[in-house]
Length: 503
Image 1 (cartoon, rainbow, N blue to C red):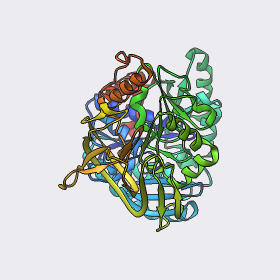
Image 2: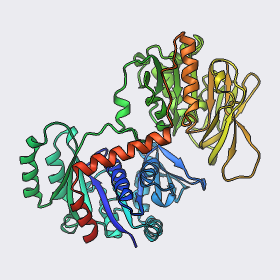
Image 3: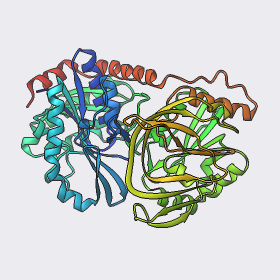
Image 4: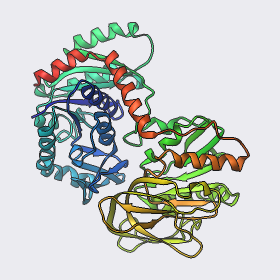
């Protein structure tokens, strides 16, 4: 069975996912077979495996860092919030159903066999498992029958590295307070502390490190720097939403829906010099972009209602009437149609008017489409004609079927990886408005390049110097940069000792 080490944090967004990914890459570089694991993930960013199973994107990112294919074994439980007090519960990649937070809290212990079956299967195939916790292990109201932090560490017999975020302040209180709130047997499992996201002169921090070790009785095994690494984020706490408001030569605005999902779809644009990708929540932030993207969402109908109430829909319609390119992905694509009907109460129930930018109707159904796809763009007319024939790959993950009507043309031909059926038509376009169900539709280098060329041509500017990248190769480089930085700032000898000694 594999050796295990667990990364827990003092809070959400302390940097657990990134540090776990960095350790996966380091162990891989050192010749070990390594896999990530997170028993329970809560995020709207999800991924579809080759088997058509759904899992959290954080473990996909970590699997990439480890140099292995993503497997649902790495994330047996995924919670996708449907509102403030409930989530869709996905177990082993399949939808179990929707539960309120209270109902799930009472039910979750029944999922321990599923967790351990997945963990043990990974453990049999690998040398090292890097486990990630969730939130904080010191949430005293959630500790009963914990399955994701100290409860998981005990089940896996994994020593724990506790991470605090110095960038948000109070890192000493974070780390010491978390340790103090743990039970005695839990404290003994914490074998190392990590101060994360440090900027500045480390010598100024050293007296605090000494005091931290004295007060906690636990060794500080590293002070990791604040890293500007372009890898895929786990959830809506991403710092992408808080910055990048400067307008570039080519400006793309992504509408920051309240229940936005799979915003990693748009990362390829961020890596193109001269292109600004801005997430906008308020009408005044929209400015005058060259393209507006409506992203995926966990609740299409409710987020469309938000668009209306916030004034964002009217602003988008105004831009569309001026000929600006509007592109919808998944739930954003559904919003662009004439009507959205929910006869089975999958979302809000009833029928509501869409934005009317594409001639199509969407009907929500209880069955969930989950599949990886490959294909290409149809012969596309209008603003994005350069997409014609360009290849694509990605995945579908949605509830609902959209049927284009007269006036809307299919955008792509796609084929299900797991099926032997013929290609099917996906998406729709009309004039300057485009939509598709395919997540990852921009990942292949030629797709964003063709879009940027079209946007540049419309503005009368030369975009030849704005080049695309091979996004898969780019991510590999980023994982190597991450591993190199962590090797420099973490005591890897101490971490290997902790791994060998266990608990």
